[in-house]
Image (cartoon, rainbow, N blue to C red):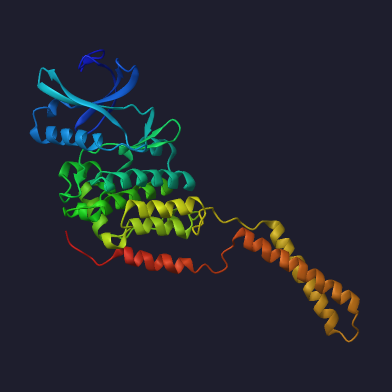
Length: 368
């Protein structure tokens, strides 16, 4: 499509800003409302393919019905005549930013708080679409935009399905494109529901925390097999600074059986919000003891030993013993307070919870 071309006597076509498996996205200008827009058109080589044309129109219908701050808005749809025939197009909100995939490629893993914020916003968008009867089925970093302020925008509802109709299996082409984020039921070619999107968010969150998806392999088929059979690794095993409670969020989302996951995107968002608000779930990295803590401990122990030795001798200087024991009590009380503030896990029973959770996530071995 030529730059400067006017679609529907209204939208001026600009440069290409992105390209996917079935469409090209161009920057455009709405001449009537004087605003930037994004124009998605079906790829020229797919214009005559009825399957892709139907999928493209399906995306337009789905996205147009969803009006949410974290979902890319659709302004208009239509067709334009081309040498290959009628080419459908979608006029969308222009997001000035980059995809999550591009951000991850540049930065690697994100700080824990930022990863949780992005995942919570994705869940908010999905909760809205699920409550309107639409399962996305293709959540991945390439389908999440981050604008220049850091706001999240979920896009590409091209393979979404209506919940009421019973979401069908994911197409082979979609599986190859985003195999790292498929749910086990998608990998097996089974019908999916909203909990499949929850699994995909878990994959995205894991990648944001660790810098890589939970499962990788040389081929999409091998990755799909891992989704079905292999237990995920807790993020803290890759980055020890991640707390066990964040592990719990990721591993619950990545449960093999939908019954063991968060049952809704809203439930997962609630847990993420609790983590961000430090309500019950601790997200901050534990503080490390420094040399002052060890000196404080040594001084308290020394004072205690001196006081006890005074009492143990036949000649007791009670004033000196009282001072030594008093100092020991004060110093050790301060030291215990320091340990509590530093949150040093002398015995962290939550690791037992993570081990049992990982066993549940692995689930029984199942075939395709």
